[in-house]
Length: 97
Image (cartoon, rainbow, N blue to C red; front, side):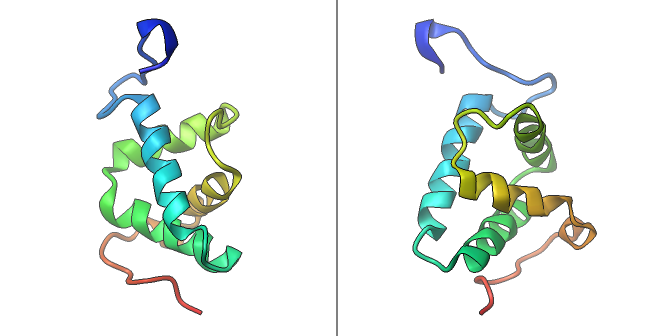
């Protein structure tokens, strides 16, 4: 929840936007030690494999609105979801070299 007890949300949401931002940044933190390209790919793979499509859509809509609260690496990695190949679901393994 954001300050003052107000709830930031998204219409038809699965989870609160503040929680999505926190989760996305935590995933970004996990991949931070990787080289930049592999980190972006790892974040994208995690989101497309484990996140509900509504969660991904809410995250991308938040990025389109400015991405407040998201780390730059998260914005870059999540933006890769827009590629047509990212629409496939399933496990993609760790980021490739």
